[in-house]
Length: 137
Image 1 (cartoon, rainbow, N blue to C red):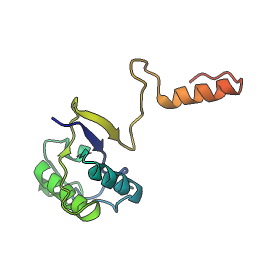
Image 2 (cartoon, one colour; image 1 turned 90 degrees about the horizontal axis):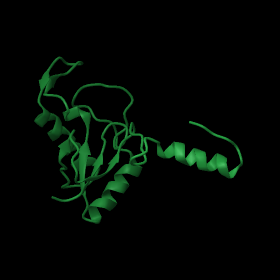
Image 3 (cartoon, one colour; image 1 turned 90 degrees about the vertical axis):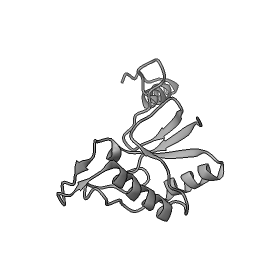
């Protein structure tokens, strides 16, 4: 197995403002598209990590049409091929495993391993300590 990078779809790779149809994806976010293209040039494995395929299939709340996870994954792959890189049809998953080395997500909060403390809390503590100000999270 190869190490992989997980990239969230809505709000990370594609603009997202509110939930709509199951098959609607926002416009690409240029900065993230550029980052993925660089990873692909470096022969790194990138997967789309999204809750859209985390359900056991479903019914669209907008159209009332049933859909499958395979249909959702295909729509996402079509979008990636059109908006990120021609020929790139990434694996689409809602599951992480031990080979995932990074997760890029608009909802994630990074925690320092084995501490329960967030990276932002550590950065704030160091900043305030340099300025002689007491700080607690």
